[in-house]
Image 1 (tube, rainbow, N blue to C red):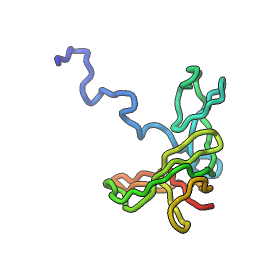
Image 2: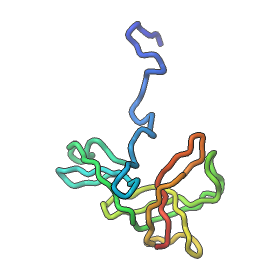
Image 3: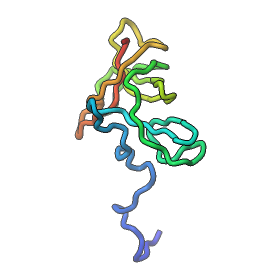
Image 4: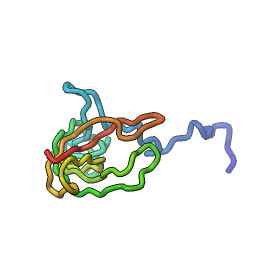
Length: 143
């Protein structure tokens, strides 16, 4: 492929979704960091991660803070961890009252395995050790 004089150099070329860490899923709120989603003002659909446009009607979405308590939908234990994670740990889906389902780490403090329908609470802390360390959502339970 040849590049013309107006073509971007490889370091300037960017593609949608290529830089996922630039998508804001956490922000400073009144009580500290909060999990960020979005809501369509037209149809009231909610999204996580947040979207700029509604998938249903293409209306521009508003940023919203998501709830700190949810219901565990499903979880699985990861026994072989990728770099920056310490095995074993749980990953799972948590349903929030805003009608969104988030895929997050689960810290289970109860007896046995995490159970479908269990109430869980949001923690915001280091989810992966560096370099650099990454702060993100973890849900802990049972509540």
